[in-house]
Amino acid sequence: MRTIKLTHEQIELITHALGIAESEHTNKYKDIIDNLVRVRGNTGAKEQEMIAKYYHVKACEFADLNMDIQKSKFDV
Image (cartoon, rainbow, N blue to C red; front, side, top):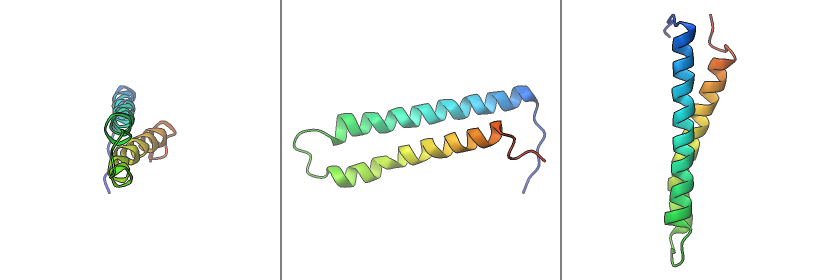
Protein backbone atom coordinates (compact mmCIF):
# COMPACT_ATOMS: atom_id res chain seq x y z
CA MET A 1 0.00 0.00 0.00
CA ARG A 2 1.21 3.49 -0.84
CA THR A 3 0.34 6.82 0.66
CA ILE A 4 0.73 9.83 -1.60
CA LYS A 5 0.15 13.53 -1.11
CA LEU A 6 -1.80 15.41 -3.77
CA THR A 7 -2.88 19.01 -4.02
CA HIS A 8 -6.55 19.83 -4.53
CA GLU A 9 -5.68 20.83 -8.09
CA GLN A 10 -4.06 17.45 -8.74
CA ILE A 11 -7.09 15.65 -7.35
CA GLU A 12 -9.34 17.73 -9.62
CA LEU A 13 -7.16 16.81 -12.58
CA ILE A 14 -7.34 13.11 -11.72
CA THR A 15 -11.12 13.15 -11.22
CA HIS A 16 -11.52 15.05 -14.49
CA ALA A 17 -9.43 12.44 -16.32
CA LEU A 18 -11.47 9.64 -14.75
CA GLY A 19 -14.65 11.36 -15.93
CA ILE A 20 -13.28 11.56 -19.45
CA ALA A 21 -12.24 7.89 -19.35
CA GLU A 22 -15.70 6.89 -18.09
CA SER A 23 -17.43 8.88 -20.83
CA GLU A 24 -15.19 7.56 -23.61
CA HIS A 25 -15.60 3.95 -22.53
CA THR A 26 -19.38 4.38 -22.30
CA ASN A 27 -19.47 5.94 -25.77
CA LYS A 28 -17.26 3.19 -27.19
CA TYR A 29 -19.53 0.50 -25.74
CA LYS A 30 -22.65 2.17 -27.21
CA ASP A 31 -20.92 2.62 -30.56
CA ILE A 32 -19.88 -1.03 -30.75
CA ILE A 33 -23.33 -2.28 -29.76
CA ASP A 34 -25.29 0.07 -32.02
CA ASN A 35 -23.06 -0.03 -35.10
CA LEU A 36 -21.37 -3.43 -35.06
CA VAL A 37 -23.42 -5.86 -32.97
CA ARG A 38 -27.08 -4.99 -33.39
CA VAL A 39 -27.16 -5.09 -37.13
CA ARG A 40 -29.15 -7.20 -39.53
CA GLY A 41 -27.63 -10.58 -40.23
CA ASN A 42 -25.35 -10.75 -37.19
CA THR A 43 -25.71 -14.29 -35.91
CA GLY A 44 -23.03 -13.88 -33.24
CA ALA A 45 -24.60 -10.89 -31.50
CA LYS A 46 -24.87 -12.42 -28.03
CA GLU A 47 -21.21 -13.39 -27.87
CA GLN A 48 -20.14 -10.04 -29.29
CA GLU A 49 -22.28 -8.18 -26.71
CA MET A 50 -20.46 -10.04 -23.93
CA ILE A 51 -17.09 -9.10 -25.42
CA ALA A 52 -18.13 -5.44 -25.84
CA LYS A 53 -19.32 -5.35 -22.23
CA TYR A 54 -15.65 -4.91 -21.27
CA TYR A 55 -16.04 -1.20 -22.07
CA HIS A 56 -19.14 -0.91 -19.90
CA VAL A 57 -17.41 -2.61 -16.96
CA LYS A 58 -14.37 -0.32 -17.29
CA ALA A 59 -16.63 2.76 -17.43
CA CYS A 60 -18.24 1.64 -14.16
CA GLU A 61 -14.83 1.10 -12.56
CA PHE A 62 -13.73 4.61 -13.57
CA ALA A 63 -16.99 6.06 -12.23
CA ASP A 64 -16.71 4.21 -8.91
CA LEU A 65 -13.10 5.27 -8.41
CA ASN A 66 -13.98 8.85 -9.27
CA MET A 67 -16.82 8.90 -6.74
CA ASP A 68 -14.63 7.33 -4.04
CA ILE A 69 -11.95 9.99 -4.58
CA GLN A 70 -14.49 12.80 -4.54
CA LYS A 71 -16.02 11.46 -1.31
CA SER A 72 -12.54 11.29 0.29
CA LYS A 73 -12.80 7.53 0.78
CA PHE A 74 -9.04 7.13 0.42
CA ASP A 75 -7.99 10.03 2.64
CA VAL A 76 -5.71 9.09 5.52
